[in-house]
Length: 147
Length: 164
Image 1 (cartoon, chains in turn cyan, orange):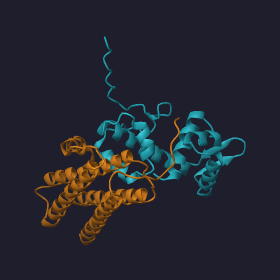
Image 2 (cartoon, each protein chain N blue to C red; image 1 turned 60 degrees about the vertical axis):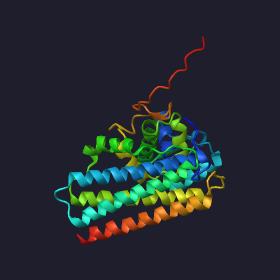
Image 3 (cartoon, rainbow over the protein chains, first blue to last red; image 1 turned 180 degrees about the vertical axis):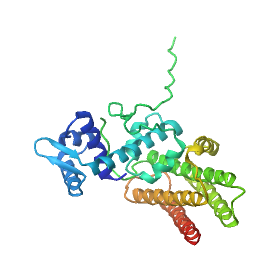
Image 4 (cartoon, chains in turn blue, green; image 1 turned 90 degrees about the vertical axis):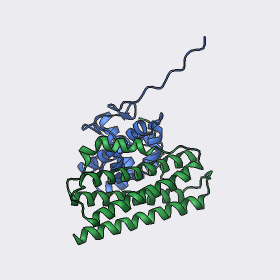
């Protein structure tokens, strides 16, 4: 997933959560970048016809932008599910965020052949937990209390 | 939402080890799917496709061993082949190719995906200034050899597909 796709995914999740255009500030916060960097990339997405900037309101994805953003979100869900269920990575969200830039969609598609993803993906993505709501993760064993 | 890091570099030993583990899994998926194609289309397979699948499975096993040697130096475990094989088996019914063309196309996807994975990984390592516990030159040389073999694999499958 390239940087543009990471932005599209983030804008999509923010606009769904806020039920309206995503403010540059929210996008920059979510990506951990400066508002200036966010503005620069938003400009590039506009040039490519993937996003529209509404003055004083924020950014809204175009239909093409939404398609790409949903693909990117799906790739992210595949990486998370693969890390959690196949490699048993405890902090799978943090690792997925690190790896998403290096894992291409075609690679995620292959990993998808061994995970059990739900048909509603990526609508099941929950921004609060930064993970798929249907993802079943084995509970971390609780250390017995010292007597 | 949690902040993400917008970076396409490999920043640490842990991240490198995880990516190499993913490479191992991809090779295992290829190996296991190839065996399944072999069994599923057993009666109909001709010599050319049989040889292609046998070579692909052998090459994947060889790549896996080379990746395992690399992650050993990073103190991380491999992913047991049996585990991935059973996951491939569990979902094969839903993802299997229907016929010859499907088998060849699946094989092409395998080779192209692996090529893309190694190519991206090499670039991400080259862009990184991180010091890894294993020799960077050896790491890049191994990954480049594997990537070039995947490119050769893409060429071979495409040639067979074009001829048939």
